[in-house]
Length: 393
Image 1 (cartoon, rainbow, N blue to C red):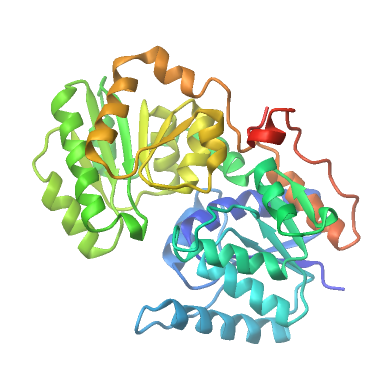
Image 2: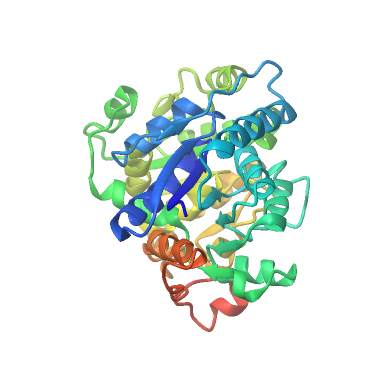
């Protein structure tokens, strides 16, 4: 039997969350991890893996003309099926809820290859938000053989959907493993604009990210107006805003913030830069699920620029608060935290509900156990409170 396990990733967040798993598998020595870049965002996957001294073992060539989800999904499935017809892995790991995750899960399922779903069980309860991610992760759950839930609440979502309890394991989220490891290295900033903005600055850092499609257009304009109001109100803060690479989005951000002092707009940042900024931030304004998971490890509260979030563990633990794109609400909630260090610190006093830094080890062992090569690991320890709120001790 093949001992290869293919870890399929197509976006930067997937690469970041899969990298610690590949490292843990290599260290355990029971399985051979193969990092497979799906072709969705190949350059960003390669850059993200480089932060861990890794590179893709296989990169699919996916041609895109229309840019539609249907085109991308079918192209990736075709490439994966052709690969796995001649190089069949013992198992396939997909992460999260992207188009790559769905393509990998379906192509493996059709080849009767066991599918391991990393970061399984997230649910917003609304197929329209986030779109199409909520639909993708529900579909992956239907074909996965092993569901690795990041939190107790995610596990309960799966059990509520009649997934057998024997197929679900609470591992924690591997993004916690990743961000702690990378930030601890305190590498110099690669981005020259960020390096210049942080050089010698004694101001408090506010990190802002607004990348989701539902934030584009009018919502983004409202978010940017809130950023300008905060800069005008507080002369001791710096804002760094990595923009989405979409040209129209970057033009919108530049038009709103061009010439505004103490605001630095950048291209998408290398992961080490982002991890270091997060570790140094006073406050984060974000619509990113990954940053909601990473920020509590550094004691940084997050104001979530969305109306709903599937990371409700953050809300239960108190380390995040929903503010949507309402400028008045964003400014008022941010001001409360900027005006009171005690209030700010109290938001994250309970620690990170998403993991303890051992999720990758549990994932590696659970995958080996699925294939009969090891015993199943113990689930991530959780408190009694976590069983009702989703917050980890």
